Image (cartoon, rainbow, N blue to C red; front, side, top):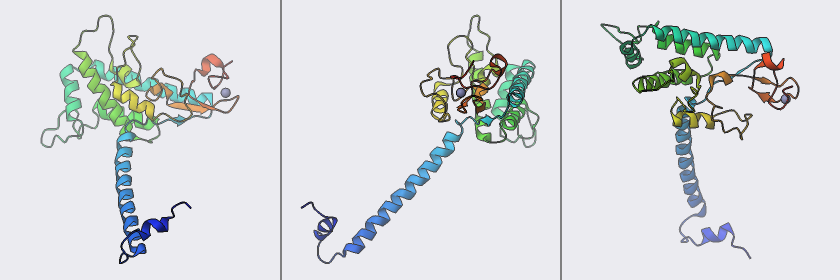
Length: 239
Ligand SMILES: [Zn+2]
């Protein structure tokens, strides 16, 4: 006969009450469980920074409206940064989130109209305020990467901040956002995206924010380009 759970507990000295022992073990398991829950909450909080918010659209018009807002964001960033010197940009970045107190400088909390604040607000607004942490992190990490690449020599490759923010690679096949950022973003992409797509863009390319149900089969997709295909289709149903 197979050993029974009661045999295990019966091996304990007689004075130990089986129920007490079981309760003790249950307490331990619960403690362990609470610890794991806490750890998971911390992990979720960190991961939120890598979860690009998506916006579901119902029609070609809605899709194009969102595309237009994304274009405008790019134009805004380009025009703002064209007027900023390298030093100004550093100040905006380093003062972000800090209070200037007596002498508010560029990028300080008091400088609400600073371009970093405005860019984060615009990104948060066009993604329907779903995940401000992501918007903030995305803008800041892009500025960081921009400042880093600015000093390097890139023959024939123009580096602009909007390109980094959008998650595009500048024809150089070199990711402009940090590799870890891209990997964590990929890990957090929606379950309906193609797991075989190893292009690496899925999960962090801002142009993938709008998604929809395919007009033909109903599957979720973010392929877009309705102006080329005459509607919102998934990759398999494109005419
Ligand atoms: Zn389809």
